[in-house]
Image 1 (cartoon, rainbow, N blue to C red):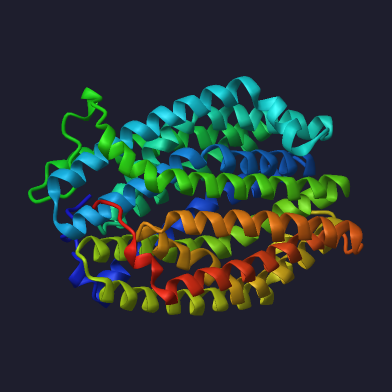
Image 2 (cartoon, rainbow, N blue to C red):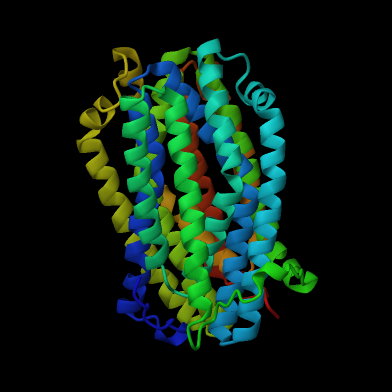
Length: 457
């Protein structure tokens, strides 16, 4: 891969540099979702039980991998602030510590998942049907073995983004998805391996991603003037002060995301009460929803990098200016995506070979979500990235945890059972959660309390 353009420092985030970071991120986020969507679409040829099994594991995966993904995000903020300050030694030191911690945590999570995968499925989803359980168990085992490779890729991608280079992670994700699709065709359709084939294909693509980004990180470290160098990374030297800085940002993020996923899994159990069709409808709705939301995540990552560098340089005025610009773009983008999803809703749901009952429920779920996403998602999930980049992670965590339990979880059970709205009540509660978070995060940003926080001192 060719040499990338120099890292834009805080004062150089013009429109060209901004779009150079944002566009590859949007593409990459779509590709990330595509891997899970391809598994779901191709596995749907096996039956609804397979769709349900894969979706169950993906939901639990999202909970288990939070630890090292949150640490990667925390490390990216620390590195981006050092880059904004133009402190090469400390940015490289932080990069090494991030890789160490992410891999060690992923190994611990993998061990737990390998031994307790079936009890964990029952814990979150109760007594699912036998064919769904068997499919989920197979997919879970391969997912767990891939955690260390996913941790390496996640940390490496976060480091490249922190330096303003989002093209390399995008290209690796593109290649990994091509391999995953090819593997699915070969193992599911040709070899007839079903869920096992989808799991094996995804596992191999994770290994590929980790290997390639490891090579690219090594190459990046040899480039003159780089802010990220992993020289002697195999020496495994833990620097507690730097790990503490990363954890001060990453741990609150991990707690926030963990509580979010636990609450989400508790609400997902509601669909089990309504049978396999409801579970499959929610699975398909989640896949379609992910395609619309993941590009929005790219705006959040962009905010993290840009605001982090601006604050590292001590330029709070530029941080406000860039945040306003990115938030406006996010609003416009998600509004357009929501509109297009509503227009093509029936054909999208039709891709998944659902029964008429399941397809009808999926359409209802997605109609609710498209409206709430267009109006509330940017302020509830993009704006908090700017607060985190400034070090205001505890406030973000507190609001997220309180809203998740007081609004989304409680309202879901009230809407579904007390008001008799059925499974669509879960998606209505999700929309309510968006709007509550938006109010608190916007108020915090406008009041400027985040400007008194510190990440690197």
